[in-house]
Length: 213
Image (cartoon, rainbow, N blue to C red; front, side):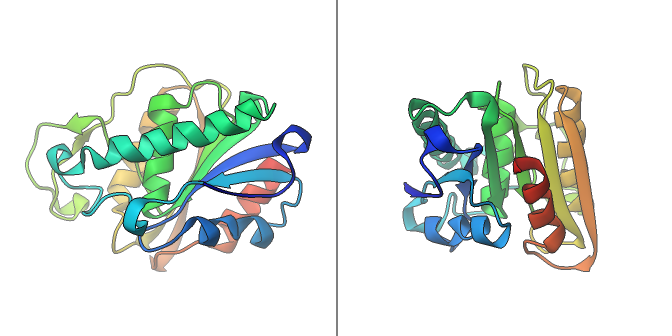
């Protein structure tokens, strides 16, 4: 785990950041400076080999586990460390980019009761299991996943962004993820960037700044 910002007990808010494939904890912590968030306590776990899982997040669940479980445990530990440092759970956010966005969204859906919300920048939910139906063009040739999460996230805020033609994140999965989280009671804002791309955009940084300040 790497940390940045003020001590959690004196911070305006806290955030757990999950890096993308090939990234690092240090890389993703750089978002704090880009978003101009000097009063936010941040903590970032680092995936073994800098990858949370070895395949696309769209792959069948048999290929995703136990990697997803390991990643979820890392984010739970990071949240617990901020709470142990006297930061209330209701002021803690999750966030991630790409593979890390998928992990952050999944962590929020499964374990995020009481958290302030989540930012999924170029990501979508991993899912609880494989759903009926064969490969679908809208999911880049993969089959759908179960997104029927139990529990409520009333009062929490969700930001999900993606390009119209993201090479890794199908727009369909983003739309399905937004619907699933909204059904849990969260307030969801989805930003679809025009054209092809895969990256953190200025609107993502503005959303971070707006909500955490």
